Length: 245
Ligand SMILES: NC(=O)c1ccc[n+]([C@@H]2O[C@H](COP(=O)([O-])OP(=O)(O)OC[C@H]3O[C@@H](n4cnc5c(N)ncnc54)[C@H](OP(=O)(O)O)[C@@H]3O)[C@@H](O)[C@H]2O)c1
Image (cartoon, rainbow, N blue to C red; front, side, top):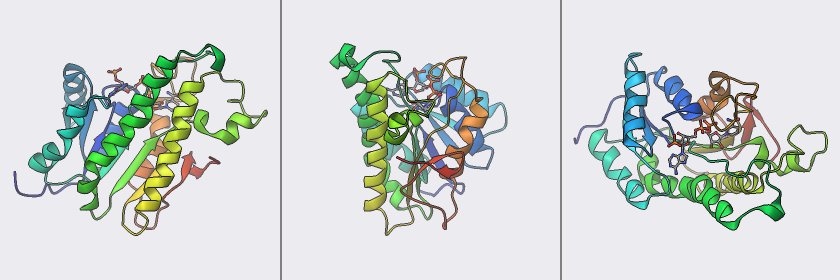
């Protein structure tokens, strides 16, 4: 396809369930065409179909963010199908060491966590950045966590202070660092790069004990993905407000 798709196009990683699914829904409800990345083709197709049943313009793409062939195929996929990509939401993530003390952590779990939460987000961003540079309103949103905030981690009054899960926490701190670095490189472009924490959300990762619904958790992420030209870049947000790194 050589013509440029009329509507804005977004890619959401890890979109087959949880926050990624809800972010996809809320973006598509704003008239954005949403490509839903999922490592399982079957789960991705069924998620995109579910939103199509709600009259939303959604498509699946097979995307394991740790699989270089999947990532390398992305630019051509977007170029041929839509001729554009405007928004990237790096949402795919794993939490594999909840409750594990640093001294008990298996280095393979640390590596696996970084492969998805950091290297995956980096590789996807790098692969699609040339396309996003062609957008008039490129937006990159990294789905981080309070648990990646070194300020919260060191604050004895924070409800996140006692959390044990160094691999996850360090991966989200690293994702925050990537956010800062990309935003600095892109400062003279229309592209805005931000990180946000959705809060503690009821998903498979967050558990049923969490206090927010996916609808509530997705709000700040969708806001950042659709910022107007005067919106912020290089920030870390919760409930649409800046949060200390
Ligand atoms: N829930 C919370 O309280 C909370 C709080 C702060 C931040 N977050 C962040 O929010 C994001 C979404 O989490 P969630 O709560 O929605 O969890 P979730 O329901 O477990 O969903 C995680 C998603 O990531 C996908 N994923 C995992 N590894 C992947 C890989 N290698 N390649 C592609 N996709 C992969 C999963 O796919 P499969 O279905 O194939 O496993 C799933 O679609 C994560 O980055 C998480 O760290 C969540």
